[in-house]
Amino acid sequence: MGGALSRTGLSSGKSKYHSSKSLTGKTVIITGANTGIGFQTAVDLAKRNGRIILACRNDEKGEAAKSRIIQLTGNKSVVFRHLDVSLMSSVRSFADIVRKEEKGVDILINNAAVVNWNEVVTPEGLEETFATNYYGPFLLSKLLIDMLEKSSEGRIVNVGSIASLGGSVDGDTVWVHKGFTRGGYNDSKLALLLFTKELARRTAHTNILVSYVHPGTVTSELFRNLPWILQFIITFVMRPFLKTPLEGAQSILFCALDDAIQTGGYYMDCSLYDHSKWVPNSAYDKELSKKLWRTTERIITEIDSG
Image (spheres, rainbow, N blue to C red):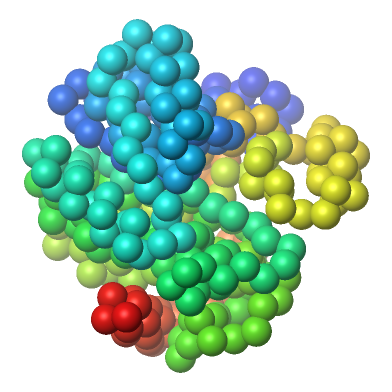
């Protein structure tokens, strides 16, 4: 059973997604689920009696989130597994654990993200923003495709951003060798959107539905690496215009649960926004998407080979 929208505010941005869909017997993976919209999404899905895997890089916070969600929902099938999505070695280790422990995966929600004000390079040589927001979700989705194909209705939900509208992507380097710029977040979210479109085309023959969702601008820890003055402006000055984590989670839940989801679709406020003014034209550049895919695979292979 799908769901319906209930308007709890004056704008569609304040919509609440209602669905009676049960996840009994289903397995869900949510990256970055220890806080913010990831946590709120996990709470809702845990209430539906699914097996919820919280994939987080901070072990202490991950275990605390697991305990809290079990306390809130009574669902004891909530587990924490370590995953630093910015490290491809960690992504591979996590995928190996999933393969050993799970019979299949029904829903993968690539939620973890970072915004950096200064350059941070991972031990594997990737710029951290791109590694977290793009490379990690790319590799994790690829590694778990066969697990998702075992599901009668497998889903991959890529949590993106309207910031992709201001992004640009070089299909030859995918930022691995470029100098750091503060527009890297926008670019990483555009890369994730291009990946969503291409993955949807490549899995069109399967039961997997792939979607990209802008949850809205949410009060969360996403901005923790910005200068304090920007954090102050976002937290206090812009607060009336921002969503709470619970409100931001609604569109993610819509993409994870609703029967109306179209594979490859861009969603915002629990609605399909494809070909709207909020979606960059480059999102529909199939050649760029293919080039981006090939380059990303090459770079990840280079990391694996050391």
